[in-house]
Length: 403
Image 1 (tube, helix red, strand yellow):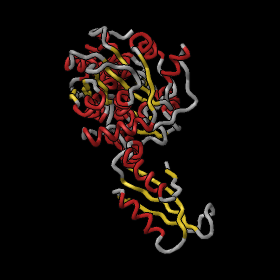
Image 2 (image 1 turned 135 degrees about the horizontal axis):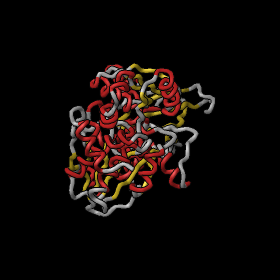
Image 3 (image 1 turned 90 degrees about the vertical axis):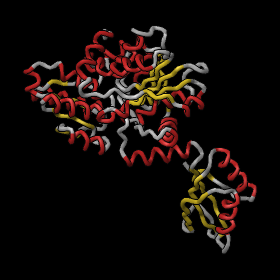
Image 4 (image 1 turned 90 degrees about the horizontal axis):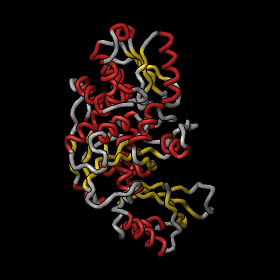
């Protein structure tokens, strides 16, 4: 099984390419949770993700014949960029299979780093199947995204940095997709600080590890569907699952709504941009998915910052909705002059800011003498939302809150 010495050896191979990323104390999240929170900012890594570490370690160990034949891999985006850059730096040809719906920003970045991108399938597992076909057809070496001890060791260099920068560590919280990151970090942490906890986090609609642990054996999910596309994996690795069973204390899940809130808080309060997978560790802490003590020293790993701009817009909007900062309502008015003005007066009295109004007389869901109105509002928080809704309902409006 993966050992601390494997990870220490990996550091020598990857340090020329991978950056040592900051570990920063967060006043905001420490005040919010009562814990002593230090953020591991791996979103500042080259290629925007930790994946460069494992990819570089694996490619550095190839034989000369393997380097000449080239490499192939499958990835939802971050591993793709890591392999493309690591291969380019080593003078190795790389072919990268990505899901057809991979974020366009990640596809473009992979090509810029020198990877030959092939789009195939709906998710990581479909892409992986095609990558193995290319492996057989072209004699390339397959660089697994997670189920490879060299890759796991490369990712584990993050654990070395956390242990060195935060010697008072009590708990580290780590995202899980296929398990390579948490396998490496848990090994680095547990072999140096046996009493420290390692908590794994998955999206609840991509919970292959959580489900496998409940069943006592590896399970393959029928599908995965989450804004955390970087950890949207249907099946955990065989090697990584063994490490997780032995060295990870607990695995919890978070919803997409909770991920969106954590991402929004990071952007607004810490001025830190992460992708969905990069926010899950903090989401688990904020929403108390695991037990922790006041003043416990906790390190959430922010594992990536490669978020598509269209996705970012959607996620931030969802985060604002979930935190009571943005409200969409629907109501009916009598179709007569002044009705809309009266409604707007109440909104203004309650100090809500109108973002957009849609006014529809033709809806079949309303009476002939009525009109349907939808209003998008900028709000100040949950209490402000409840105050506005109460004021409208007290004045006789039947108000529906829209998702």
